[in-house]
Image 1 (cartoon, rainbow, N blue to C red):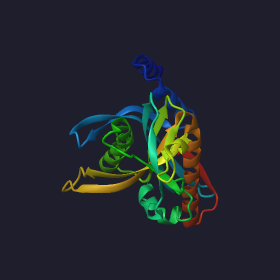
Image 2: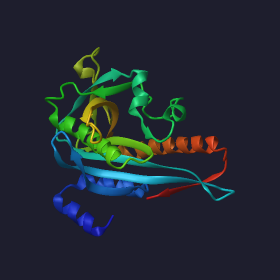
Image 3: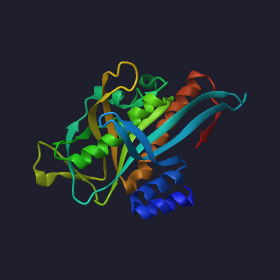
Image 4: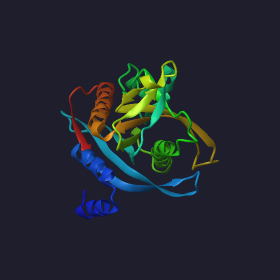
Length: 255
């Protein structure tokens, strides 16, 4: 990251953004800070804290030709909380998972059919009262809004992830309706399920409805989430290699 940009972030007092950006850059991601998108619900430009990206290129080791390429985009909202927060814990319906995986230009049903994605989990978090949890609701919807805008305005083949990275509290509570509140589980990270409606920017501007899984991740565990995403990248590479019948390839990442 350029020193000028670092100075601006430090001056704003937003150290969490800087810390998250540095974690991403050390993991070899291209990082853009405060990228803008158009929020159709408010009909004005908005900021997304961070967009991290990389292009993955597969090259045949013997022929030197490109056998495949795809992108990975992380839409990251950074949020500092001063008080405890909680989600309802709900069992995952297996039918939710594939729609929540945002992979475009490749056959996600084939690539991730055997559970080789971190969205294959037993339970997810749900907001218990979105109208009263406005800060949390906004944190969850910001990366979704940015992701959907980006996909419609400049779509590229690849994987897309909405992520909230938080700090300020040790974890978030997952409440089980079958247990007492005192038995609520404190988690560093969880995946939050959200059905989101938005108006398309193209064509007849139809109202769209999509399911999203949002990684709600403690800053200290962001590296672990990046490792999981890397395994999903490797799964796509293996699929391309097998489908192209090129077992030996060179993998290059462009940032």
